[in-house]
Amino acid sequence: MLVTSERSRLTVGLRAALVAAGGVWAVHDDQDRLRDGLTGMPYEDVDAAATEPDAAGAVVPAVERLPVIADAVDTTCQLSVDLTVLHRASHDTSLGGAVETLGAAVSGSVPTRWGTTEPLGHVWDRWVLTQHARHQAPETVRVVVEGMHLSATITARVTDHGIEETTALTVDVTEGSLDDAIARLTDALGHIAESSLPTFALVIAREGESDRCVRAVTYPPPNPVALLIGAPSVRRLGLERSALDAERPVVVVGRPRLPAYVVPLGDAATSGWNALHRTLEAVGPERLAQLVASPLLQAWEEDLHELDLLHESSTETAAETETEIERPAEDEA
Image (cartoon, rainbow, N blue to C red; front, top):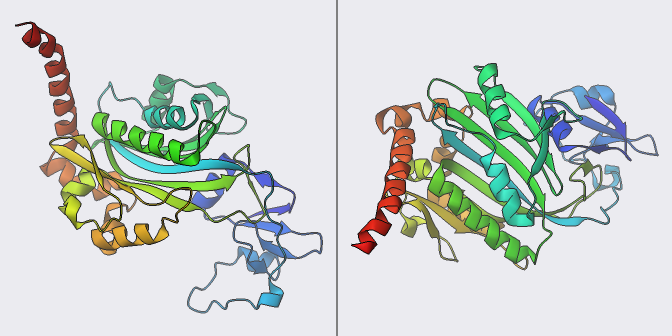
């Protein structure tokens, strides 16, 4: 449990570690009341905050018991992305590419430092990061990444089946409008699907602190704006684009033999929650829950073995590269 005043803030790394550990952020306000720093729900005391709530017997507190929480001020427009990519366990596999691609697309920002503890002690280097993950195997590795306008955590699991890389990124929108940034980011997701094997990604538009930290205040509600259903998910679920109940056209990305779908949800003027719910219903919530169960490499073991998607992805990429090399000669002929 972490107990702070209501003027404290959590870094991206601390919040990720707290959530991963099942911890609680308890906030003491100026009236000596105690509440959850992320949800605002009140606690009777520290012991109550430390007790795992009983969902079946939980009682919604009366309105008069809810503490008054200040609204966030001086926030900035941001996009948050949760993305999981599967890699082959080969020597040329490199982690951290998604952070670079997505950060550059939204704000032109790239990572500058990374580390397993804060303050971050390493200059950004994808090769060093990848070797660190390999040396820690089979232990799961979680690192924090920072750049001028981005903050992220990268979680890597290295096994005999491959490498599972999960990126949780928040990046400031610094160039153009929010809708422009959404368009650039969804294009970037398409490029990632062409060069690697993502399973799912969800993009959320939000208002947050300029340093990407979290304070114990009330923020405007987030808005889902895009969903990537990667090639492994499309293959496993047998999804056809026509099956997705989308108000806006679903975009097919990736490679011809390994198609992935980008589903537009909301934008600066439109809430995407209804579109997200319709899409998840079309996919099948129960089947989807199985595909995103952790660890993903174990959940996908059958497909990786029988369909050999990781090998298919790499060989198709190599074939496309050879075609591009040969094409000028054919044109000259």
